[in-house]
Structure formats: C-alpha cells, structure tokens
Amino acid sequence: MREDREFRLDEISPRAIGKDIIRNLWVILALVLAAALAVLGAEKLLYVPRYTSSAILAVNTTSNSSAYSSLSLTSQMAGVISEIFGSEVLQNRICEQMGVDQIDGEISAAVMEDTNLIRLEVTSSNPRQAYLIISSAMDNYNFVSDYLFDNAVLRVVREPSVPYEPSNTPDTRRICILAMLAAGMAGVLAIGLFTALRFTVQTRQGAERHLDGKILGSIQYEKKNLSLREIFQKKKKSLLISHAMISMEYSENIRKIASRLSYHMRRHRQHVVMLVSVAENEGKSSVAANLALALAEKGKRVLLIDSDLKKPAQYRIFDRPDGIRRWLGDYLKGNCEANQVVSYHSREGFYTVFQNTGVEDSGGLLSSERMKQLLDACRDLTDYIILDTPPMAACSDAEILLGLADTAVMVVRQDWTDVRAINDAADVIRRSGTDFAGFILNAFRKETALGSAGAGREADRYQVREGGAVHGD
Image (cartoon, rainbow, N blue to C red; front, side, top):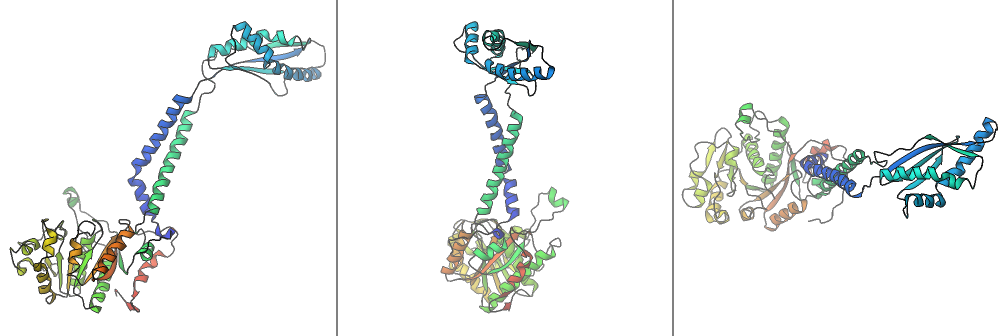
C-alpha cells in the first residue's frame, strides 16, 4: 500500500465540500453566534464611556486694522491661544478652583482652518466633570493669557453644555456583523479544507491514482424516484435495473461492469465471486443484486447468495419475495437440505439463497462444511455464483468466505471510506490467496473535479485493459 499522497486538485470533489458544509451548518452557526457573543462580551468588559463637552470661541483684536490683516492676526493669535488651553499652568489653575489634585479629563483646543475660531473640548469619564472642567478653563483663561496678549479679546460663540451621551460610542452592530461574517467564513474554509484533505475517494481521478487495483467501472449516483404512494407509506425502494424508473445510464453502467467481470472470470475459469466492502452503506448489496440481474439478462445461469448473516439485505432488496420457506441459516444449522433453500425467480431469471434475519455465530456457520458443500453443489449447475458478504470492517465473516470464493470485487462508495483502509482490505484479499478482480466505484455523482478537464472521458479509460482486450462491449 502507498503511504505517500500527492495532493492534487482533481482529487477534490466540490460537491463533497458543499455537502459537508451543509451537513455542518450547525457548526458554522455556532461559530457565528460565538463571535457575536464575544463582541458583546468584550464591549461589556472593555468599553469605558467618555463624555465630551465643547465650546466655540472667537478671537478678536482691539486694534483698528483692516479686515484682512485683522483675520490674519487673529488666526495667528488663535493658534497661540489654543496652546494656552493645553498648558500646565492653566490646568493647575483649574485644579485649584475645583479643589482637586488632578483633573479627570483631557483638554484640547484646535483652530478652525482659515478662521479666528477655536473649538475647545474637554473629554472625561463623567459628563458633569467634563462640563465643570471646560467652564473652569474658560473662566481662568484670562489669568494666563494676560501675560501674553494685551490686545486679544476672547468671545464665546457657543456655550458649553453637559453632554448626555458618550462621545466614544462603539459601532457595535457593525463590529458584530464583521465578526460574524469572519467567523462564518472561517468555519466554511475550515470545513472545506478538512474535506479536501480527507483521504477518501472523491473523484474518479483520485480512485485511479490511489486505489491499488484495477477499476472495473463506475456507477453513477441514482436518485430514487418514489411514487406518492411509496412516499406516504415511507417505503424504501431499491435501485434495480429491472425497474422501469431507473435511468438508462445507470443500467448501462451496471451492464458494462457485469461484462468486464464476466470476461475476467471466464479468462481465469472462475465461478464464485464475492462482493465486499470496507464499511457499511457503500451499496454493496445493491451492486450484487444488479450484477446478478445483468448477467441473467445475458442468458447466464446465476445464483445470488446473501451470505451476510449479520444484516441480510437481499430479502428486502427484492421486496420480500413470496414462496421462500427456508433460509441460508436454516441450511447451515442442518435444519433443511440445499435444494430447499435455493429458489428460482422467474421474473428476475436467476436463482437465490436468501436470509431474512441475523443469526448468532455467523462466522462459525459460514466456515462450516455445509457452506462449502452448498457452493460445490452449485458450481456445476450455474455459470456464476455471487456472494453478498458483510462489510470487512464490521466482522470477520467476509474473510472467512475468502477461502470459498474464486475472486473478489470491492465496492467503493464516493467519499465514504479512507483510501488506506480500502487498500489494506485489498491486501487482505490478496494475502488470502483469492484473486482480486478490482474495484467498483459506486454512487459517484456527475460533477467536474477541481482542476479537472475532460472528466467525461473517464469511461474511455476503463475500456482497454489486460493486453488491449476490450471490456464491457
């Protein structure tokens, strides 16, 4: 098995990323909510309101000069006066008047451009303090300015007032929205990155590059078209190529894979093929049923055995056919003979051995001599025997059946199982001495992988195998 992985864009499925994002929307919403709460919490803990009281003062001269020179002179004087309001002398005078050691606020004065007006502002944590400080500064200004100017007159244009609202009110709504958007985007990027780095088979290109074995074909994802009656009855419908509502492309993919598998088995003189998967819900049982149908359509004598004694599925896939009185478990326990468990279904055109419920000690029953006798008896009566087995990661039953099968095929569902686990399972099959025919890619949706061009030519790459022999036609 290859441990290294060369990361490529054509191995990433945009649909898989979108699906994971939708599936984990609650995580994104939780991050967005956490960001909003963090902003609101930080505001409560860190925000200190500040109040600003302001006044506008005009600087005039007592001389009788022209308007232009008067404006020029007063503008220069305003610049000096604005510095007086920030002087330490004035601040000490304010402290003496208010009876405090240090004023609780900041005094700032600025000249309005090209005017003789001064904007005087005092900012404090207490609105009344801001008003008292600015009033004291205006009252004590003359105490300082008389030492500098004797021809300047300071006139109040706008009186100060007690501020009722903080001057440093944060734009909490805007900050909260930005934080929520950032948290949401971070969540989406994290989920997308996790999906992209997840070492599963997301695209056909990735399958060809990383799976250790031949790919027999790919089966597209097929949506189950339920009738209104089936929807209201909550009835589960199986995807069988014998159903009228199944798409032509889905059916043809199954038939091509059946032809390639038939060619492989004929070439190696094999009769028994087991379908395996690593994990549950990879569609192995549906693929096994459809392969039996496809081979039967070609006039082959096919026997489908549901050897999953843990969670049998074929009985449900074929809608619980009537007339079956004995099951595989009954035969393996010695309660009936082989001819009593083999049933022929005229509508499907092949033989079946079904199991309806799970049984205890399934491994012991499958490894018994009676199971071997059943397969030996059916080899000469059929062209193909298909074994539907339990997932290899769930139990050891599939490994037990390896000794009874001639070849094995592994079903791999799109973006389902880790590639390393898939290749490990393929190695187990090879080490058992059983031939490994290859992989079937199941439930692959139609899409273009990131960085992929010409994905539609994928089917062509499945055609020529084994010395140029054409498969599936």
